[in-house]
Length: 298
Image 1 (spheres, rainbow, N blue to C red):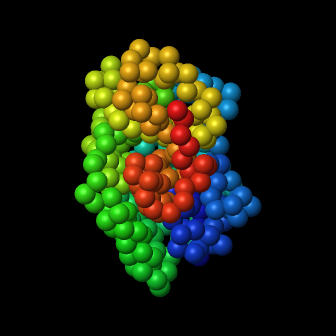
Image 2: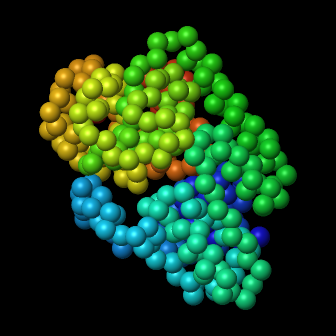
């Protein structure tokens, strides 16, 4: 089967199912596993995140109408002649929208199927893995999903009965944007009590005063699409805010920079690893965690 993935999480899913060799097209943001680097790119963005601050990126995103942030090379897509295109319609600033992809595919002289993946919770993320496994006729897809669920259950068992610290997960630094959707469930599975957002919630920016009022005991920095190095470079955006130094998390030295794109921002199978990383961050349990996965800031 010839697969085009227009969503990094979908690329993760295809790889998890052992079908990365069937990818013939991807987005400019698909960066895992390493071998997808050789797959043709069919999207681009009008925003250069390397040259703009978080505030500037936020302002630029707000000035676009949804998927106008992204361009789709329809001619190249047609030349790739995909059997299956995986896309989404959940977040206007995460990827090319389903409608835009469907419009592009409609003009192709081919029998191409377009499937939109729109999970909001951990269960729905894993259901997407199962669903894509069915589309790709992966014989052991159910077993692969069962293994992911077993890992999540093992995390919950490892932290059972431990005190549950108050956790603020920040998905964007300026403005401050709490992480919603599946992240509160990752926190809960890892033995924390998530603040600022509910499971499955599509969040919006919050006043900094609300973060201070919640008195988080742990702060997790996982900006969407940014590397740890970029997060650390922009840390003064937060440390200069009133009340930062008085946060219980800051006083206790429990502020962490995480690999958001790999384990928290994208609704793919690596969210399970994200829960395992959080169990180490919150309770010191589980296997070793690499600095590239979680790094203490203070």
